[in-house]
Length: 388
Image 1 (cartoon, rainbow, N blue to C red):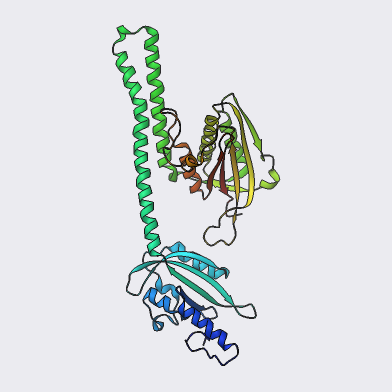
Image 2 (cartoon, rainbow, N blue to C red; image 1 turned 90 degrees about the vertical axis):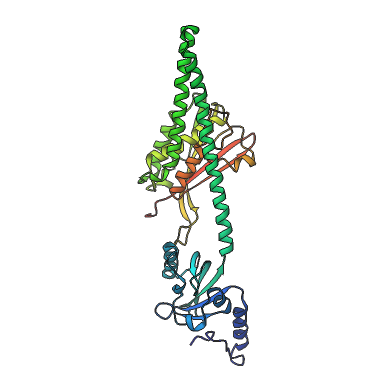
């Protein structure tokens, strides 16, 4: 029998007063506390405090001797359960947000922290679980998320209408002028036809970017040698740089640091990411200036994915311009769909948001830094393939 499995610690025994005080602290804690015996099969609970019983509706007779999985239900996320399982296998600590069920069947969001407890010899003896009901916070965050989704959808619809209208108005105007050919000389007719073609192409580019933005989750990824495919993407995008832009590469000769490193990406999508970053940078410099592209390996570049105890290495691609910079208020919105500071007809506002969506799908991150009057730096972090 575990010494703290009951509420009767002997204060007269060795270190008895410390044990009684510890038990009292656990019993009065506002957090749910449980202790699972790691020396027995299936990790049965040997202790549960009052806060746990109040939170779950279970009494001591219901939980002692049983595994804590009794709190799981039909909508509990399997990945959260898998993370707990991996934590137990690795004998490490972790914190998991998991949907649990009370005895009466009602649901609650549990911020579950699991920590191993070792005995004096260093052997694993138990697992301490701490449960916090954060249902109210999750509901609030969920409502805010839905509100933001509606705002983004409204901005998306408004942006589509705005950009297409910018293209359609001159098309209609030029077409009406061409309906009266006798009033136009040959050069004016040619100018009208040219205007129709240019605006039609712009409308087509808007539609193409919207489709790319909407279908970004349908791209098939493959395993690639990192230095090779990133170099190819940079070479591809460099072909479209204006004559007034000079390209400076930094870190691309660091083959030793990147040797045999691989990333899981879609080639076409990576080309699009680099091209969009180059377009954004050249626009910021009005097609004249120095564009610096950096490549490096970050050994601890990304937060751990579920079940991993160490930060994941990542390949960092940085694109820096010498433009006018972005003010802090605007910088917060640069990755939002259809957000643009360009004049009507000069940009759709989908370039950076498309980059963000693509890189996030790869498990990576995108960040932007800027100083007014000095330029901006966009950093893309792509995780090294997990097989390495």
